[in-house]
Figure 1 (cartoon, one colour):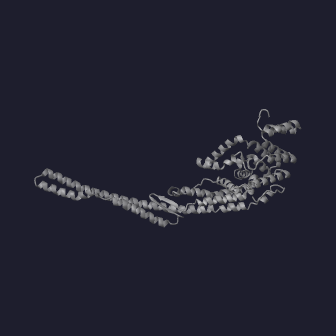
Figure 2: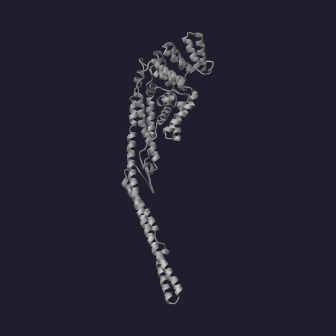
Length: 457
């Protein structure tokens, strides 16, 4: 206790040892020191220890001390420890009744706050959206030839969220209740209190979670930061009771909640979850683009559902034909090249006449020049014809390949829309699953005693 001044657990262990050895004065002094160092953790610690020792009265007193010091709008994140013990059915009947009464009071106080419903919708929406995963596309042409691709990826990830959430909730409720003994479960919760709730470790936990997200999103740090911002409240040292429930339900690792607490939190807040889930679904559907843009070379158009393939083919052929004709119209002999045929002939004839009239040298020069111009004319004509044939062939190949790309692209668009509709339809399955959860029945069966926990949140 002397060597670890400031650490709450040291005097608690001294008090426990003194209690076991019937050293009342030392135990009381150590307890007072533990309370001075950290009243909340000390109260929680002794509540769990007394329950483990089957001291129901002492457990109730320590639990009451802990709860009396709590503010439902500013709870320490370790409050999940008491919820964990409660949800796992580990506390005695009197203590369970006290916790149940406190939960109802907290819920009443929060529900009566202005803007509470809107806050819950926003709070749960962020938690739900944080479960989105990177879309693993199997498409070849859509990413390359549709400027709308990133929008499509966004809405598809929103649709895939339904399957992810359904699997998430089903997995939670399919997990079996722990078969460990009461003492073993309490020991586990005590270990969690001691090892998982040091505020000094929170920066390291945030860093670890961020690195996990970067890996999950394949190096996309921007996206990892977005999700990290949405999960930020999980690592807040203080939060209101409903945020505590949200964190327990959606991020058990970060919040330190057990599966029993997850089930309890989801059952208690299912109405808010459904409301937020419907809101998330509606917003994702609002982002569905009305048209999917197409960009194949110089051809740009759009389609609504990928079924107007023939119409777009006609437009593409017409555009490429016009582009071909425009290039061919420019691929003609210049006026000078056309002049060379007739001008060269005239000059050649003049040269011949000059040779016969005694101007041999000048006549030869004129004749050679005439031949040159005529040859140039036919050379240019041949080159133009070759260029025109090449242009025609290039556009024929381009038209053929572009049509093949267009057809493949339209097929992928049809497949994408079908895939989206199939995955988006699973939203109803998520809502149906949540609606079937009965908070009253679930809370009642957590232990043998009846608990009067609010169910119509």
